[in-house]
Amino acid sequence: MKLDVDALRYLSKDDFRVLTAVEMGMRNHDIVPSELIDRIASLKHGGTYKVLKNLLKHKLLHHDSSKYDGFRLTYLGYDFLAIKTLVNRGVFAAVGRQIGVGKESDIFEVATEDGTVLAMKLHRLGRVSFRAVKSKRDYLRHRSSYNWLYLSRLAALKEFAFMKALDEHGFPVPHAVDCNRHCVIMSLIQGYPLVQVKQLQNPDTVFETILELIVRLAEHGLIHCDFNEFNIMIDEDEKVTMIDFPQMVSVSHRNAKMYFDRDVECIFKFFRKRFNINSDENEVEHDDSEVQSDEDCRPQFSDIKKASGFLDKELEASGFTRKDQDDIEKFVDGDAEEDPGSDSEETEDEQAIVDQTNDDIIKNFESLSLVREGEDDLPEGNLENRQYIMDQDTSKEHSGKGHKPHKNRLEHENNAGDEAQVKRGHDSEEDEQTDDDPELVKRLSKQRQRAIQAARGRRKVITSRNAYKDKGGRSSHNSKIQKQLSSW
Ligand code: ADP
Ligand code: MG
Image (cartoon, rainbow, N blue to C red; front, side, top):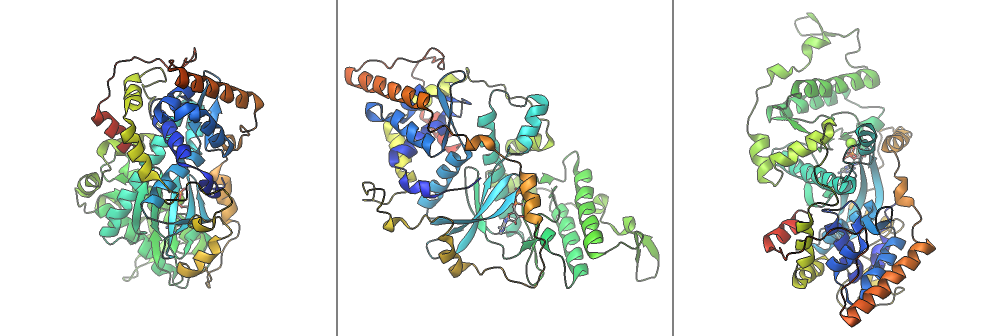
């Protein structure tokens, strides 16, 4: 999916307000009813419907009228919310080219104000496996959208927490910079995934280093679970960096031995095939000239001296809880049970969101504000002052500063990218043309008119027949709102 950050330049505060309203509504709704969005955003004079049209045009929202008139965030919409928040925090100032496509992520270069280039990983849990699981067992029938947001956010939180903890314990991982929603910002690794490397000067050393890593991880209570040539980066000096942690498990996991052996096997298999290591009929020579099968020299899970507490204590302290771990493991294992919630339930939370005072919302929006002060009213063409969001073409300027173009003696397999592309699957629904649907445009205009009339005549907005049920009762509690805000 192309991440056209250009659109960010054209989005106003109201656009982000409505986008955030949809995000909040998705806490309880797969498709958020238009009226609920309007109530959460509480823009004056029916402004919400005009904004919805604009967001739809930019493909930040998806429209659905199959059950009732409503919207949900697209990946792009969720990306923009995360990007805007991180830009406002000063974590980075510009988005550059895409540098990686994982099974369930997109990775981009981003640049800070001072030109340092970092890596941004946008998690897309659900892009591949979600669909596969869904087709098999009607997984998350009611709450699929909520769950891709939830699971992608969880994956990012987990990755960030693990990366930070591993970094602090001296493991060769990217440096974790920040995290918001489904987005992780980390240092950029100057190197290539091992899968692209055809020749190594010291393949034995690299092989041993990698095996030691697996063992040391287990000694710290962790198993990577996807430790393969796609998730090991290697630089010009043949220094190894491991990446991609959302699927890691504790050594106390019921399948720990199987995951450990699988990681080891992946490395053995790859080095045997690519670098001819341990390929001699599964036999290796030892110092005492005894011949042993490679089975015997493999690290064994039962030999690991476990240092307990690493996962539970440190990672929980970082905000990634046992429950989060369980939730994500369920998904990774593919045996997640259907979420008991459904669109017609949980209206109390909904009411709490709607009841949230405008002060809270405004505070939230001010902290999200991307457009610098005084720029709000600039005509769309006047963008010179907004260069901190750059598109793919302008990224070259930045990459010159902090990021040397990759040029090294390693040979690469050009088809590695294609492989990833195939693995990635496609998300055609994000490309749907919804913006020029005349029916929808008409309906949105009508709703807008109705809302304007309601605002003028102080009449209650007529809710559609199929809209969500409202239990009423002003059950607005700040704690609930806080929970809502912090959980997204
Ligand atoms: P996934 O979980 O989808 O497999 P990964 O974290 O493995 O995603 O990243 C996919 C690809 O993106 C990697 O193979 C690598 O080429 C690139 N990549 C990821 N993180 C970084 C980084 N910090 N620096 C440079 N490239 C990276
Ligand atoms: Mg990966």
